[in-house]
Length: 340
Image: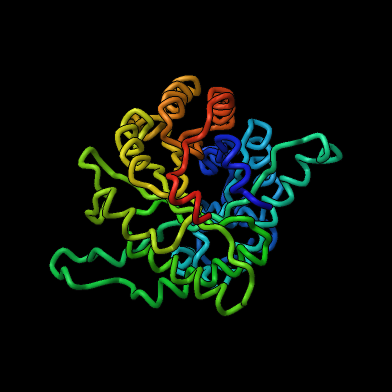
């Protein structure tokens, strides 16, 4: 599958929030456990990635809703599927299996979506292996009294990502998406792990998508980098795309996407939240509102890949897809086209 050919033709749509859709099912502790983990020694409710093993039909169903809404790229349900993040549930040993299972759920959703109509569907669909930011950071100390302390080492983070990547590739993903990056050093460990994995296995390297998170109006990541510094820090990976997601709604993200579109030599992506959360932590921005913002970005030539993050639903994705379907994608700089 050559996603570059698709990106040359049109703006691609990435899916919306997985967690938002899982919450709609109002699952219980027993639902999360399933039969296999019914006697697990810790609570597991909230471990959404586990549902790819215990409730695969729910995850497949959510993926299909996004595909039906117009998504071209669906993300695996693996935001926390590392040995480091799964330690919260004492499920470190499941990390590889979680990634394989989630990738297979996404592949099954695409197969079911195509059904017998594959020859009639002109637009290809892709599975992006979602690689989240971890719940531990390499750049910041968790102890205010000891700024030099780190809760984890670079090698530990790289090893955790290596395990995740091996599961995602074995499960059949088309792309690898390092997303919601608030600490670029964590992202660099993920990049290192990806490169090492493909060197070790001698498999054909999959395209890498990279998506950072600007946390506030200062235009910096949580670990203090400006957008340009973040971009410069990850370009050695030669990613398919660099973009932004999470933390901000589309209104607040606009200036940062504009800046990124001006400096990036690769494709650009953006999938904002459904506005900013209200006092209850919920998202109120309606699908037509989100789509209006993203349509403007597309018309300005800022983006190649768009979608939604926290609070967005298949309805948001449907509106976004409809609003950008007739707009030309952002042009790559001439140099990048010549090298591609």
